[in-house]
Image (cartoon, rainbow, N blue to C red; front, side, top):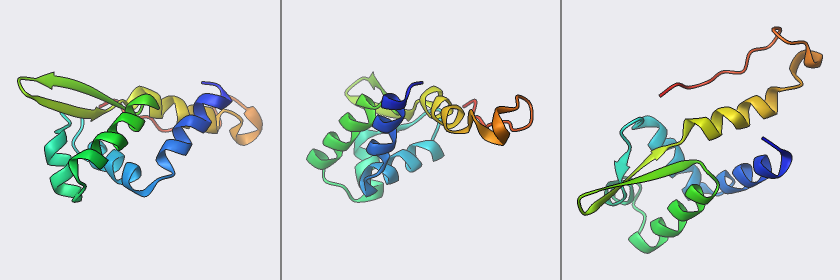
Length: 106
């Protein structure tokens, strides 16, 4: 991950609704939730939710899978793991093995 990718992800999450959506999807991983269920649980109108999901997807934080007439969104843990590793890469003076960044394998 490079600095620009990290800034894109952090900027995406620096918005209340998108952070709530992301946190909800983390709770429901790896299966994810249908877009309508996300909107229902967070009380976000469909048009607004669509915009936020597009932004999260563009930042690489969520992925969408269509099943029948529903679109299910889930967290892309690879992207968030890469961000955490990037933020922690100089931990403890850059001494390998001293600090281990947490990862999620869902």
